[in-house]
Amino acid sequence: MTAHGTSLTYQLELKNLDLAYGSKTVVHNACLQLPAGQIGCLLGPSGCGKSTLLRAIAGFEKPTQGIISTVGENISDAVSVLPPEQRNIGMVFQDIALFPHLTVSDNIRFGIRYLKSEKQQQRINGLLELIGLPDYAQRYPHELSGGQQQRVALARALAPKPDLLLMDEPFSGLDAKLRETLVPEVRRILKQENISALVVSHDQSEAFSIADLIGVMNEGEIHQWDLAKKVYQKPATPFVAQFVGQGNLIDATVSCEHCVDTVLGKIRSPEPHQLIPGEQVKLLIRQYNVRQNTTSPYKAQLLKKTFRGAYHQYQLELESGERLTCAVPANIEHQPGDNVSIQLDINNPVLFNAD
Image (cartoon, rainbow, N blue to C red; front, top):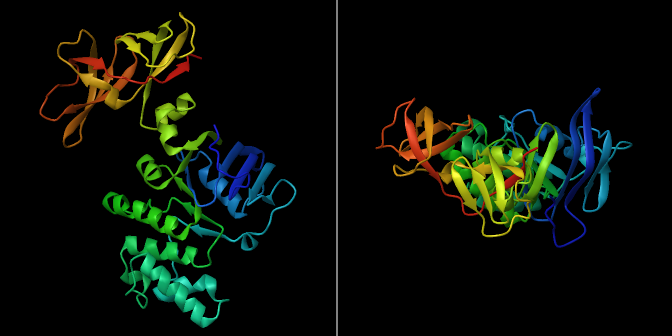
């Protein structure tokens, strides 16, 4: 699925892109369109090809097929690759890589030394204000916290005003609490600078916090490139459905144009689903769709429970052998092996062909 911008010319566009290491294709038929000023995120498990795709956009990998273009200009294909230094593309890496012997000010200055001194200083001062570190110009990287270092790395990448910013797992080295505050802050900075950006992440909450558009990848393929909300609410493939929001798929049978039957009862849809009665399908069930209800006739065996503070996360097995997860308040105690009475609460069912 493709998310459409308001113009035919995109800040970044990939068309049917293949990338390979030797004889092994690691990215296949990748397509995406990133409008100007938008933030995209490539989301997927480790080893799915996200970083390889980012390297190709930066100019470090040559496609075996397809085209990479920025603002309508071809910058990579199977014949030629525009050198990285000619692309006006900034990068922020996982390891930050600030120069330890340079001050914060001189780190930011690194990419704009071609400007007159006065212009350099204006840009540096403006960026220090933007990242909330106006009094840190003469500090060195080792005198900064991890979050402050990441902000300086971002300012350094933004200093030359790149056409596109690429960020490869930029928050993975930070603790969870710091990520929670820094990710939306980075989004604010990018939006204020009106910078188009493409971020690589394997963290779903991070992706939804920073991105306008999300591309879910697996085994070298982009399964869905769409608005963040649609990726969650209307997953295009079973992989997207199970990976985003940690969903499970169970068997269901179409009984009418608004209903499917499952081992946990009949599920109704407010809209007709265009499926044929009797057709076998898969129904997406996320954790919040499963509720404990002592009066329900439907039971599942508790295989495993994990304490999450305010609640226990249960892994349940149905009589059919299919598995679900649900959240149960921490004051309710069940033990592995117990049968738990549950019901489904699904307002807009997501269905996939059984094959």
